[in-house]
Image 1 (cartoon, rainbow, N blue to C red):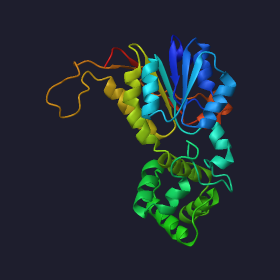
Image 2 (image 1 turned 180 degrees about the horizontal axis):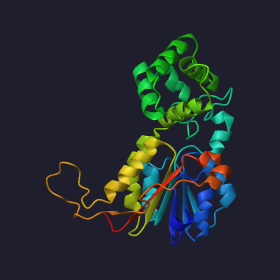
Image 3 (image 1 turned 60 degrees about the horizontal axis):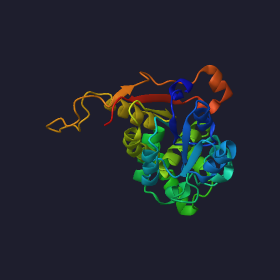
Image 4 (image 1 turned 180 degrees about the vertical axis):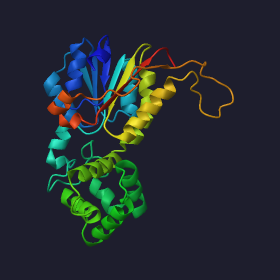
Length: 291
């Protein structure tokens, strides 16, 4: 991470969280633009890092407002650390965990948008089953969706216990934390439209980089990693015109080069110190010329 960051002069931490990565970026000498959709995260980062050499922007990194701010900033480093922050997981009232009694909220932007409870209480069987199958690799996704619809007819889903009990009814008494974690994660990804935002934002963020600039993404879910891997691969091709376009208009040269042939994963010591990093994968790309 430090090696990727060194040499940067204007860096965007697009998911600032508690400010750890932003602190590193500033430590290597970069002016930092700190972005997060969570106002609590911006407040925490500001309390930790202050105002010297850093500016702040609140909003999703895929929003027009943030993308415009990033483009104006003209960065040479952009970092996205995807998923949920430790602060969000540890704040029970935010509803990101399956701790007993936690509300089914999961909104990264606080009080805006649909909650996890809204989704579970209103979406049809087909949509629920599709998301659990695709985002949680759940073999009994349709059965789980049917159980949810049956249960909500008697009482609406309101807390983590309601969802955990539906999972247990579907998967049986041997289901446990690993099952809860992947299904709660799938629900959170849908609530916050995380994959859609990533897919939309990556090209715009890459275009905002100055020549020689680098973008890095840390993913925690196979769906996220697939989007990043495919984008970086396509950008590194000699021709990046849309499939089926009869005449090449991209000048027949790559937009840059992939810096990580394979994703970089945390070592044993890092996972021991931070178990939540065990599924992290780091990928990086360097822009070689203006698109």
